[in-house]
Length: 95
Image (cartoon, rainbow, N blue to C red; front, side):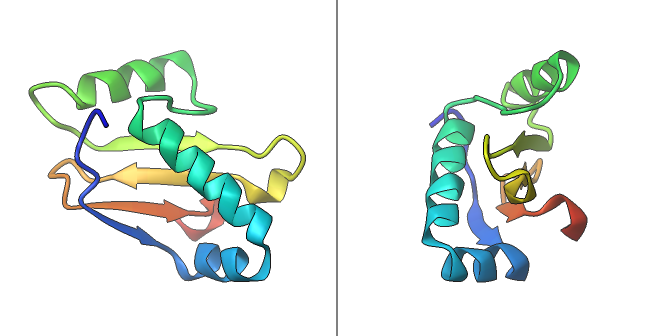
């Protein structure tokens, strides 16, 4: 793992979807594993570079987006606070 996630939390919407659709839970876990390894998902080049810098000696907020190839409504975001106190998994419309 490249950085501390802090407390891992998810929004109510993500939690409910995970309970209702187990396959969605696998998507979340796969995205989280990618995130912890520094794969920022479907972000543009500039945002990926900002995340790479954010895990350096001057920590900043980290933001990534992950789309499911067959279920566009399953797009999720992951946000880790600059102080590394928490990482939140959410749907874009919950921001």
